[in-house]
Image 1: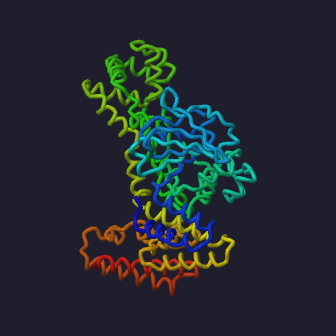
Image 2: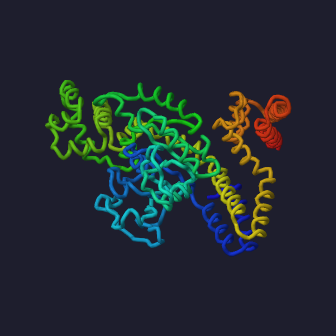
Image 3: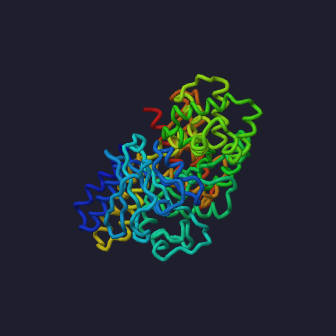
Length: 498
């Protein structure tokens, strides 16, 4: 469902479509239609970083292939539909429908040469996709890789944030996302940062800031050997990575992706729980031995057949198996559903879901409206008809004069400061970010128990501080940002007085 900002832009598109030429009118209708869709989030990262595993957890079904194959080398869009359907969309507009494979996953082979594929369009009946469209991307290549001419033209960067063979249509599908989740493992390399910046520069109006990008530190269970607890290592490491990526993502969330996928997709069965209970009854010394490595688990867990042992490894890996065994040892009669709930909690996925809710969905109205305004501004700048250009520019300016749209100016100012393009003292940067990314005056003003009068007084005082800073303490770029913040706090004061 569209928010008020998006709804206003959609209305503008409808009104202007009948006043401009056919070409511009068609693009206006496309922009309007996109505003009615769920927020589109692209999952980015290197090959084998765990992107598809995370996608499966987010959509609540194990449908994206996690092994490298044809279907993992192209962009795949997952959206809600009334029936499960896989369409390979070719660059010439043709569609080829495919059935899901016997395991309910996208087929490894698409039946179309990769050079002809623009993207794979997957509709699923998953309720989780009603409010979120997920785009699974090819692995990001090193930014030292030279991009093809078509991709360079579409993405607008001189080095490739994608695999070298990605075509312009695929790059365009990625660039249409309004928000980005970047998945990485263990060490963040310098070219990871550059690749993410290039990726995000290619997407939406707010894409070059932490406002619509989130980092996921995946596969944290691989930080320690065997079934050991990775969280004492993962938590501080994620904080360090968050500091390294502070100008690029809003947060870094550590996750055991495999546990999240298994739990959220309902992959763990009652038979699996019974098999784990059998293992939990083994002597402690024997358990310690078989959990020391995957090879030992395969060869020494003799109370279970080879097929069952392999299934447990594939669904939980050693950390998940060890965690489940500890739960069953302490509470042998724990149900399958409760065991799954505990496994999901142990994966760190609930924190990721909460962060996505706070970071993306809460801001989705502003993110989508900002995306649409960027497209309108681009359309106004490139439309061949001079009269159409003037009509579109005038319409956008009128819309932005509405006080409600000052939130977009705040977000734009905050991203400039957050990325370092407009340097500002940390306390000013933090206050601006709070103002731009929240509607809660108590949180913005750091007055959790204040009443309306106290909040209004504090908002006016903040507005005056920013006005003084704009006049006396700032350079030209800082002054422009400060003026935006000044008006934002005055509007906040008016809000709390109503």
